Figure (cartoon, one colour):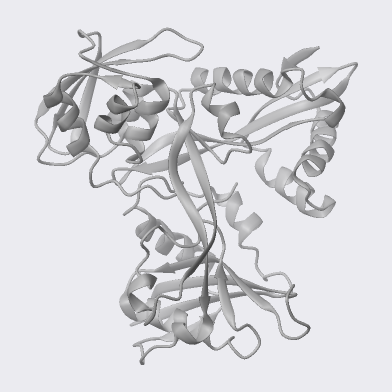
Length: 391
């Protein structure tokens, strides 16, 4: 058994079959995804008798933290052939991937877990939650909105709009160029609709949704929204009106996991308590390089003090770090007394804004003076974690 990078195209073909079986996707969909991601991905495969029996990959991107882009590797497609499961191969390829990303200078590693316990044991922690929502179509109707809808807006404009809106949150990735060919193809596939909202010549909103066969009735279809981005109230109202117009054939509108941020502005538009939560999922984060991650992120402009961390290591020694916060930025130097001791997973959850430092201390995952813990709470109090990007 060997674990290493892909050796040739044959390894990628075998991994493509393995990935499709592991995640239950069609052959065409899997081939399109792997073809899109492989050019830039870091990948590690386990090979036995010249056959790929497990694999994992991460694609380079940036993740928004404190309004600034932080170098990241989005971990995806961790899979093991059924007959080889239970032998530690998933852990082996994941550790190999962590080592490769660390060597490449990657600071963060977000992922969507198939098992929280599996990734938590390797230093990841829950960094935010997303939910799936369902809203009666009639509830989305509103008053007139300035602007007009257009079909199939320009992809570059949608990407720029989406990037501007997403920066208000902690966790969205800056979608690589290949993402838009994969997730936002032009022309759109059958039964997929793309609309933009334009005001004064500029794109201020965009929505993408599919029309799918309903499971609970013989007529019509179910509308499922994958993307909804609006930079103005008129854009949100206009796009909601578009979705409401589907009501005769889709009585309710479903928003897929991550399509709406926690506490999305849509909540304030719905006239009754009619938003139904139909599922909860969580994304996880590991901080591969705490010094680089802290230095690259944005911080409150009023913060003017230092903290000395000892960050627990998983598969490596604890790291001591002195951080000087000033003017919305942070400077880091190795060393210090480690006055705040915090587990690796708890540090990642605090960094994303999902967990307060005082909560980590109450759970036994951190320790420090009350003053240091209070400052840590304040430093990430305004971070709203959200990862709207399924990968």
